[in-house]
Length: 258
Ligand code: ADP
Image (cartoon, rainbow, N blue to C red):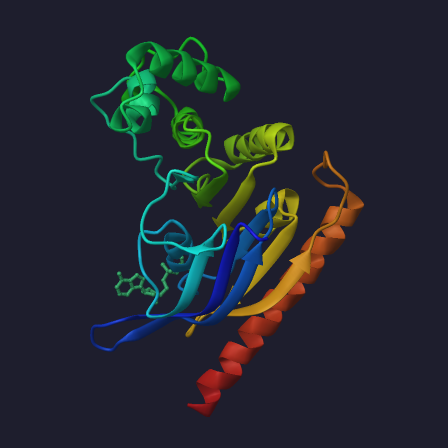
């Protein structure tokens, strides 16, 4: 059984003019799979991720987690967003503990789990620091530690490395893969960066905008651990770029037809 199943999902937003953010989306995500949602801005990637996170309900269709409809945020799902959204008045350790506190996990266990998780993302020794005392990359790592500390079945990530410089981004991608290869949790990851998508994914789902639809899927079966710049990965990047150019041409033709 897939972990997530999206069946015939459309998502419309009211307003003038109304927007069809997603149309007729069918998608299944298998256990332990690393799926990347890729596409230009406005093609509905974040909307789809929010549906999986239970933060929105679809206008049409069904979104299932482990075979049952999603009715709201769920413990089995950890979420990490672009800005890491840490509380500035809390230390790193207190930030990572937030979800455990909500659940009434005793202080000793919270402390142990948050420290272990901070260590796993390379932040041992920074537990007592506040977010403003850290670099952007460190804040992102803390955001990931916070998402993982509850030991979720699934990790949803919305452009988690969008706000850091290129070299930090590359390091964070490698660290994320190391973590993933150790635990093989299911990941759904949003990006508009082709290189990042190909390097990370088992499968890339390319969305097209207005309305957001699945345009094409790519299985990236290059062996792991992967080496950046590897011939096979570069060939796959070229295929994805070709599909993006096709998307552009279609958009131009539609523009002319209008
Ligand atoms: P992406 O993540 O691919 O950039 P989004 O899911 O953020 O795409 O947005 C898809 C479309 O839906 C865009 O046209 C966006 O402007 C619109 N949209 C997203 N959220 C809302 C909202 N809450 N209200 C109205 N329109 C929205």
